[in-house]
Length: 280
Length: 307
Image (tube, rainbow over all chains, first blue to last red; front, side, top):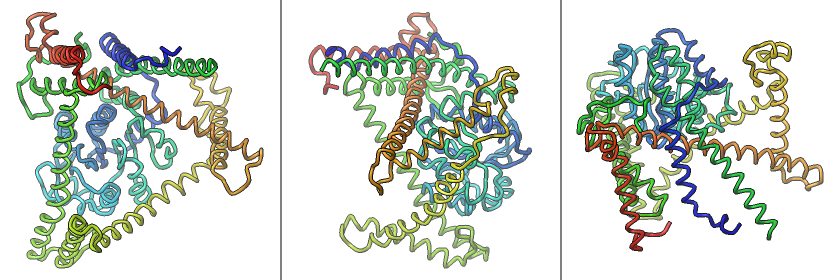
């Protein structure tokens, strides 16, 4: 028993690596059942009439991209498929490069013109205060865009938005933590009555259940939620995100294997603890 | 070991900054080296990990400094004042926070804000001086007001309203309807919804009563408090589960990413043959070099600090 208690934890890391690599190489995932939260996220976007304006806030960084980038990609595809317009903002300084790469890749597939169908306004420092500024006066918060420093009033889409949240029909945040969905709800959701959707990291997901559905109409919880959403978007777009869907479905299968291993470790750890305590 | 789901990269440029293109060769080797260098910490602290850590901190600091300088200094001070002066000269209306304002006042407010920001830095010269207290007082006051209004509404009033929700849901199915529905799921069952709401209500009351210290802990209150503790433990367990979910998702993404770089386009041996191509691909070759170096270091007894 003493040898088990002093077991070198690096063996556990190695076994976990073998499980993840092994399943990643050999595994292929199936279709996941879609949860109510994900359905509501999808349905809220589906319900918007063509030409509506959606504010998409990239509130994440490379550390959380593994969980949020699939949701971000799928959401952009979904919005463009529905012919909705996107105003992209960011409250995390490391987020804008993702905007550049994802919109640069996806927008041409739908013939979405910059300035007409989407704009990228970039990073705004100030956390909650920045969100309050965006809600109060988008033009004051962002006098110029982030792509080629075009003045706010010279972009046709922003002319349609006007100066505040009245011109925005839906707010979606890719939320990795602070500032994120909880701050958008507090600073914008309650004040301007804009419906809010979110994709969240796993760590932040439990906080959001209390706000659903009254303050957050739907959400994609962690990579699991993103995978479920990718399934729906893939069907709606006729396979536009097939590659991402397959990759994420396979990752979910790997995740299940890793989780089973962790559950086994918890059970074994508890057994060692209780047997050891009885012996003492 | 090729991942069938990932697109095979037939040709990869040696170096490109175009992020919409498949990854370049130099980037692939860097990504693999840094990922494996960070993972090597799981064995023990070592120079590869230290290098990756210092590089990450340095690059991160540089990026953040650049973004905050651009968006927090250049744009709100220099560009703002320039455009305010231009608007003033052209006789146009200038806005501050959505309100039209005379340009002189707009510039004045921004200059005062800049001076207050400098006051904050005066702490470096006179740590106990009066100057930093003024901007701090303004910041605390504004922030408190901002948080109080929005957060009271969203995290107190509306959450309380949610907590007294009805225990039945007309959108859910009754027992008879549920069993007749092919592919039924228990969460669509009205009785399950009512049961969940009941558990939620009891858990909420008991958890709140656990934090009531006004009254003496009678047996009844102690019992209720125990149920509250169990509720809290279940909540923390759920949070732990989600945290594990997130961390494992990050690990899987990294492994998947390394797997993608076993593509012949990134291999030093090119598409010459199965084993050689694989052996000289970035993750395998770099993994072997790092493992070998750490192994030799461990054998010589100078592989760095112990884990």
